[in-house]
Length: 405
Image 1 (cartoon, helix red, strand yellow):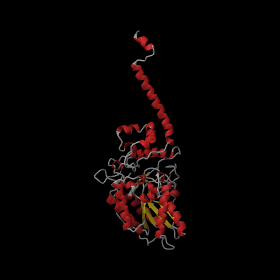
Image 2 (tube, helix red, strand yellow):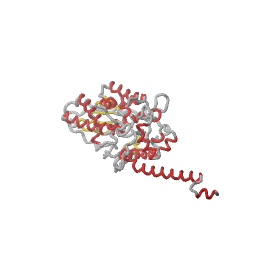
Image 3 (tube, helix red, strand yellow):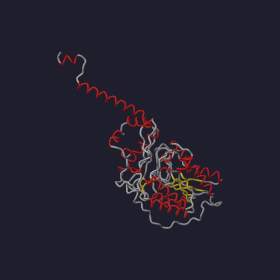
């Protein structure tokens, strides 16, 4: 029998067999990838690393916006959400643009004439108590409605308890560290005339200082080259999500301290060094006092606090620094990690790895309300606890350790 006849008899040549198998496999995988991309938005979002703040480099800022948009799509599906836009500011780095036409982060958002979240601040009513918050996107209320933010909830509760008008002003801005929050308080504090300054800076201070000025993409953070390549495939991401309960886990799933959090052992430093961070908290306390206000501190919690493993050392150090300043100032302190653990909180209390959800804000709001109620309101008919004094001319804080657009 000839070679031609053997092929006709039903047996395929090895070359044709390999080619047919390869093409069939590619078509099958392509079909699975299409199916995975169609159904991926409905799947539960993975726990992702927090985003660093935008920088002066416009390409890095665009990269930040693209990354944020991807995160929003994972979190909110096809609700038409958009990343939070930011506008350059020569003194503080960045603020919100004065007008937002979209629906960023899936929630309604007002922006006042200062570039802060919320409506324009009205003149104080007689005896009005005003809370002013400072911090980054977790204090700003990323992903939750304005009335769901913990300071808004605390203000509403205190109004009922004290039978006096109580309002809330959001001085927090996404990505702001203590250097920038200090500028916000100095710049707008005299006009806002707060009764309480609620300080919750943490995450933007401990992010590692990126010396190149580029934004770290999630896919570039401590992943082998093969994993970074596979992460672009929807079928890979979907399988990872489905198989997650059976896959080996790292001890600390929240983040890898060497990759995203500034290290205290000579590695890449945080955006704001620990000594500067503590000094900034003390400076905010001093400014609040000169404004006639009292200061309260909030130690932010994260999903890592719900796990048995210890938190990264750097985060523990910064939290301890805030605890020390609160004790020095005899100021109320909301210990978020302990609060969330005692409430048996779950991942549903967070939107992602750093931002509390409306349930997390409700927990913080109730705790803040209790703490301020215990301190009591300002004297009857007054809005401040001490006689306000003009702010002395002070040198601008050193912001060289953090990015500034």
